[in-house]
Image (spheres, rainbow, N blue to C red):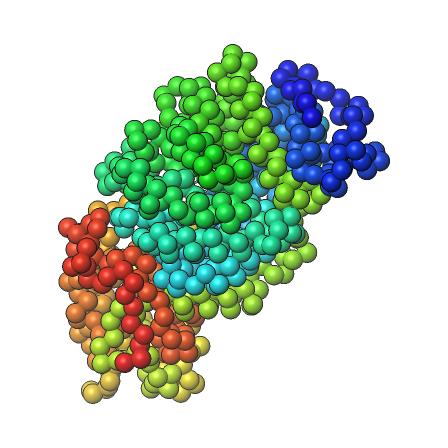
Length: 620
Ligand code: GLC
């Protein structure tokens, strides 16, 4: 069917009867009486796309390519500009940060979008990277580092399903997840967003999670759009190559050849495309002397042509701005390279103006614009957004439900890695007479959840609902057991000869992205001092480490009787107690090699403290 392209801003009529276009199966069948073809769900998606595209002005097309942060958008612009998407950046919550508050906020944005001339629904995106993790009351799953340790694709699929259910309950259909990074240097602040240093482990877990998010069909009411990220090689950057603020490795240079890029970092994307990925987010990093957001070889030739990706490519937050000092040049180079939707959180008028100018002077072809818009519209039709632009707010009761929390608890238990277990002191007897628990981290939901939790960088204390590790311990022991807790490990004068079995919970303070870049990943000195203090009084000392990556403990670990890598378990800390007391077995294995010292980084090699894949079972 020949399509004339509307380049001018002269809006073709939306009520003019269009030539009869074919029904979903037979080109000759008329469409449903009265429905504009693109509004007819019986019509094949590619025909709905072409019909809608033909009706769009250049301004409306560029509007669809624009993704704006919800605090920065003038509500009247949503319809006036026909914006394609809105997002909540990390922590971009409504004033009422509750599931209902979120559902109401997104409903209002979507209603505004549907008032646009063509009524094209919005895509609303969030980083539900470990559960719907901006929302107070949502279940916070273990971060990917822990799920990598669990290494259970079936579990990942169930986590995806539950995460999608909690998202659609708040009217949200787009998840900027999974990160399919393959982190190769644990000094990177985003190591915990990756599943593992091993490509195959990343691939099997990420595709399972994507299948869970997207369900059997993207148009199912409980399915959401997944976004494998950040394309490509974000986990392969070199220390000291970042040029973003005072980051050291995040957003740096992936200084490897194409063979290594294709062997280590590309396979998760190929698998994700095969598993049905319909949006992919680009990496801030650089490769081959070029910012990824301007890499037409990788974005177009490889991702779209070679891997056959027919969804849309979305930029990262203001990432195209890093391409060139001249913003107009950045816009032209990123869109021509293959970026279809630009996450331009604030300066969206500039983006729209610059891209409009570029098309008018021929620096960006209308064919490229139409290709980008086709991809975006295609996914919106596949999601069923034109028929069901809202989610399932009646399922608000499911957000943070007991059944969802049980799944998270199961995931926490499977993610725990037993690194040391002298005299087989683990699992503990729940009938134990007394257990001495120390460390602020034992009673801190924020600490056990890490970054990307309620706020971008995460925070300490009771940031959301859930069970601390201490709560879990108290629930696990029998009624006659005394659980004594002191954050400083001070338990007063005990009767001489009192046997002390102690649990010290220590960890990294929350961080996200480049703020977590560190030359030597270590535990806070105050935490190490606490453990040393406990060593001096305890007969059996069990240390639980909360961290987004392996941390340097070689100087201390021989003094600790048992050591559990708990990672960032999220809101259900009772999953840690489940393995400490043997309700569940230790099955986790290290997703990252655990270095002996910083000099071994980035690749610890055979002399690591604990090798990749290591994990004791606790069965003696
Ligand atoms: C951030 C992250 C990306 C996230 C996006 C939206 O900078 O790099 O992973 O999806 O912005 O919050």
